[in-house]
Amino acid sequence: MHDPYLYDEVDVLKNLADIRDKELLRKAEADITSQAILAVYIKKYDIFNSEALQDIHRIIFGQIYDWAGDFRSIHIVKPEDILGGDSVRYAHPKDIKRQTAALMKEIAKLSRNGKNDRDVVFRLVRIIAQIWQVHPFREGNTRSVIVFAVLFAKSLDFSVDHEIFNRNSAYVRNALVWASQGIYSRFEYLERIFFDAILHEYIGPEEQSPSNTEKYSKIGDYDLKDYKERQHEQSDDENS
Image 1: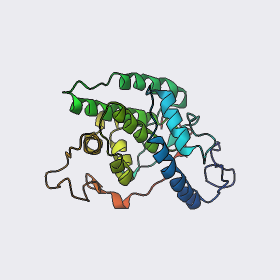
Image 2: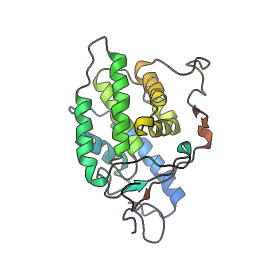
Image 3: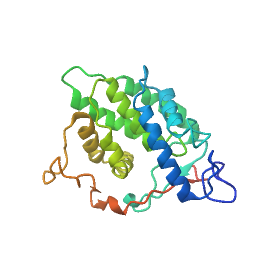
């Protein structure tokens, strides 16, 4: 079955600029979305729910994809080098709306009382990882979910350094991959960057100081300089 998000003749996402070269589209998307993200960061949402997440995705990607803000309609997989070529198990398309709404109810329960900041961030990491694993959109989930998390943390009056996420995008995505492995999930990598950005508290290895520019260069033994961004692929196997 042909992926409806791709052009018939080339393996490139259909886009409003009608770019049919994958590398050119990647560069155009990066330029457009980097500017759009700056605009989103000054927005304020009264309620952090599925509609807010969709609005964030629409603002970031609406200038390049006509499906921006819409939940995906197909099964997807993506081989992950950090998992030895395995893929995260994303939500079935028919379950996206329900699962996302349920996780938004968990987000709504988070509040600060002056003594629980570390617990709030601890719980936020796990909810954000679950939202990311649902993977509501065809592409652009990492950027949208992280912007959502930043804006939510700011709504709780945290002083968030969102540039930490921007500068370390490969680390963030691979940390989300490791936090989306069910009973085998490892949250310490995602916690490290969330605690750093939100609480300004670095919890990495003792041999790395907070000023070390290499502190987000690896996840475990995996060197992120070897990471190559790939596009998700359609899968006809509902269990994949």
